[in-house]
Amino acid sequence: MHVEDNPKMSTAERTRMIATLGVMAAVSVIFLVLGTLISINTVFFTALAAFLVGIAVVKYNFAAGLMLFFGCGILDLILNPDKFHVLLYLAMAGFILLSEGSYKILEKRIVDPRKRNGIHLICRLVVFFIAYMPLAIFVPRLFLTEEAVMRFYGQEWIYWALPGVGVVAFVVYDLAYIFVKRTYMHLFKLK
Image (cartoon, rainbow, N blue to C red):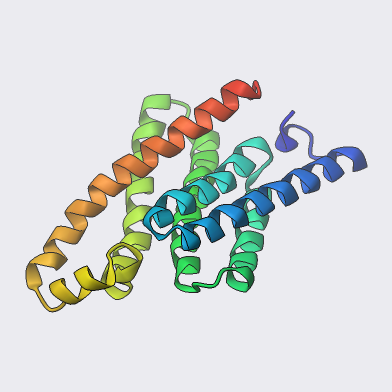
């Protein structure tokens, strides 16, 4: 049962939701720290941690996802030795949080699923670039090695390549999230 289906949750249901969000936060922080310790997989582990925010929105509601987002962000800031990865997590999880939130709004306002999905795709793309472009330009070491950053520093073509790479990253990240969300929903018989 979704939380929004029953706005007056019992104490047991609230307790179960908070316990689930606590476990999700713990798993998320483990992924985030693993991403720092195994530096070649930073983006992979950060994406897995961010996917949990979307699962919280799907399973419960936007407020639960927001609570998990801020809780994991604070825990990551405290526990993760590399503080730059907090920015990557906030961008990736924020994208999913805003994506799921915008879908919930569109779901209530637009009946036609094709039109709703088209508008939602545009919303997701805009949100992705708002999060991605500042990080790619101002904190490139989140995506490139220190050697690559030094090699490309000051070269104008790299700023033109970043949006193209961003589109590919968006497609891969979005498809991976959709796969994880559908698998989760199928396994736990949601919707």
